[in-house]
Image (cartoon, rainbow, N blue to C red; front, side, top):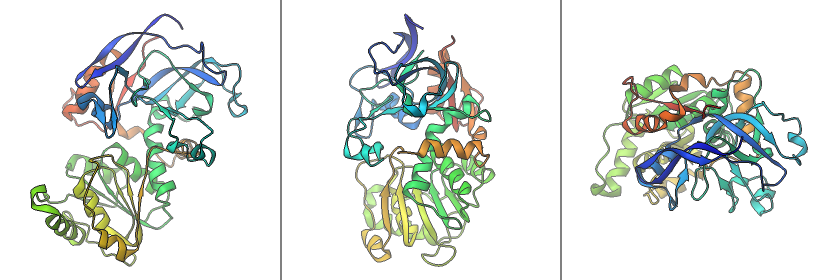
Length: 383
């Protein structure tokens, strides 16, 4: 595959669309690389942030950038020096893409925490192009052949599932029969629910203000759902926020968790998948004595937290970012063994040329069918 192809390019906030771009090849790349034709790509919240504001957290779009990083595809070319673990790859193989190439030599890479590599080249993170294009090249070690039981749509969902596996299993270190609370019933929150269920959590409570998504969470394995009351405005200060958090922790369902901080019904692991300050404050207040709070969602840079509660409960606060060594393998295994079903999460599908409409559906919160999307997939460029 050579010459001109198609790509979905973001120039700056709210200026994006499908256009012609040269097709990637393996020319000039190390021999351990593989060229893949993307088959399906999911739209991530970070893609929407870039499209709407030109930035996501501290990452700012300064030059035109191809979007997309949640992808599956078909191998179309192989380098001449593949690592031993990938020498069985063949042209035509269906694969899931782990969209980050690392230096392999820094202290983080050497200890297996390569998500912290300072030189990581992550797809659709400025200044690196993403996967919404005719072909995409990446090191073979981050290309995973899909088992026969999995579809290419499943393969595109492995990237967000890996985020959830990292948060719940690796960072949160969930144990069987523990209780989990999740703030946010978006795709990552729902996938954290799926992982918690696969790891035999006893109680899984999901909080959100969207009743439609909470209904889905109940159908997907949540034992409890919570619709918190409207939080106080930021102008009322941290005291009002702390009072709201404490009330939400103790209030009965459906507006609260009816939770204790010790005992069999306390929440051993709490995950915030929103980044909203009110969810962070409430989640920390909800975490059991000796429990763990994991921040998954990326929101505002600075928040007020109840530090005295952290201290007296001797709880842990951890951040979870992307995924590290072995997480993709575990994510694929959970799906292949039937412990997680990804198919219900895919609510909307678009062709490549309809990519602008796919992004509009995410921004508007509804597709052309009038239904709220959970996960939107964009098909690859037609061969």
